[in-house]
Amino acid sequence: MSTTFTATRYSFNPNCTTFSVKQVSPLTPGVREQRWFYAHEAEMVAQYGGRWIAISGETVIGVGDGASEAAEQARARGFSDMALIQVPKRLGEWDNLIA
Image 1 (cartoon, one colour):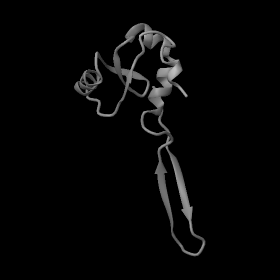
Image 2 (spheres, one colour; image 1 turned 180 degrees about the horizontal axis):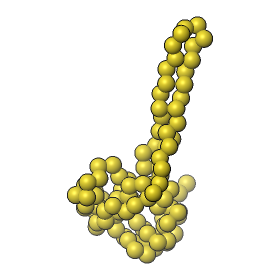
Image 3 (cartoon, one colour; image 1 turned 45 degrees about the vertical axis):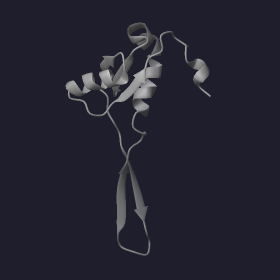
């Protein structure tokens, strides 16, 4: 089981008696899923090469020949937030696309 942490940002004005608290997310949505995908890229290519996957956290929650099919499968399982990633057919196939 993974834990999601949120940071808390405080603003304080010394000339008044109040301060505000705002919780901010530590990562942009989808970054955690992308990091997990790249850490497990070889496994993902072997299992899902050429297909689209929907990921939530560190779990593949949908698979399809297109992004909409993977998303529909994930939504059918009760997920609404997900990252959609097209898995390359071969490991390293898209390395030249990274600037």
